[in-house]
Length: 363
Image 1 (cartoon, one colour):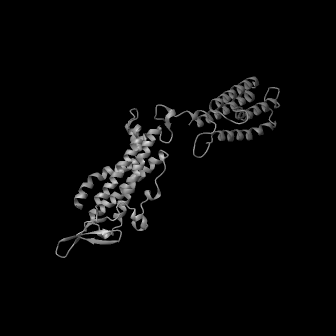
Image 2 (cartoon, helix red, strand yellow):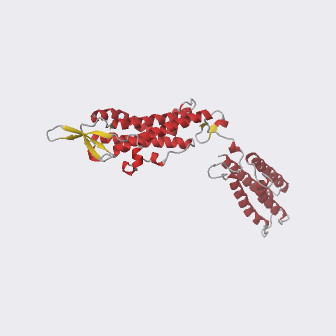
Image 3 (cartoon, one colour):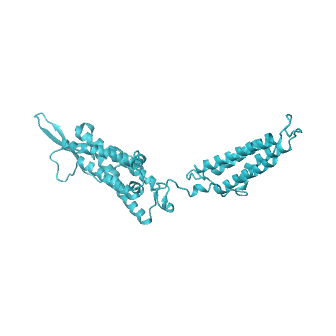
């Protein structure tokens, strides 16, 4: 906005200069007034560039001002030396050759102004030579601009806080590894073995995990922290793991279930699934075989959710925004309504009531 205002005011001064030259030298025949007005307007334009622009090559701000003032001076000289009648009016057959230089000079001035307003590089969208935008932060939400983090618009973290945040992120990554491992094993079960309740719980857990992964990834991006690994963001299938990766699985050796099968006598028999050998195991289970319930997989996802909430609360951006007393509640809700964290929270609140009844039905 500051750059647009500077260029717009400069264009307005240029237009007024041309207009006054026409009034004074064509209609009123008052050349000295025209000279005074041109000097005044161009001095105002120079002052504007001195206030807003810095670090220009050559002679600093003078090169841009000279290029911008040159067309008006040429027009002033051309009309001053043009032939006139006894009444001081311009002759109809005059040829204004010098005025042809005004147009390329205006183009050069505009291109130089756009170059001065261009960003320093693709990552930092800061105008190259505009002084004011380097310290103006009218949308800042922090009290001290020197401590602001431009990525999140909030107070930056000190070394101690950042170290604590990194530890929390490590905890979230560990919880994500466990949640992915638990869901991966359950997703390896043949679909015809699930009951309707188990299928609903598993799909909901997978959707919840995906939303909270997006929330954590966004938080890491805002804080310029290392992103999650690809296999953490996109869970690989059990069938795609190598033998070594299956052995390193935190739930290695655990069977999944129980699953129910109706017998011919009207009773139900329980059985389990072993993803290591891709076979069903029937009761009674050996004492050394451990069981991974679906509720445990759901609990692993819930543990990851808690870790992500802890990371987001420590990051400072949303904590300060939520506690800002001078910001209207509606504005805060509109600004964060579409964030990955808020979408995950919203989805969690919608499904929280149905999870209890689903577990009861499954049991």
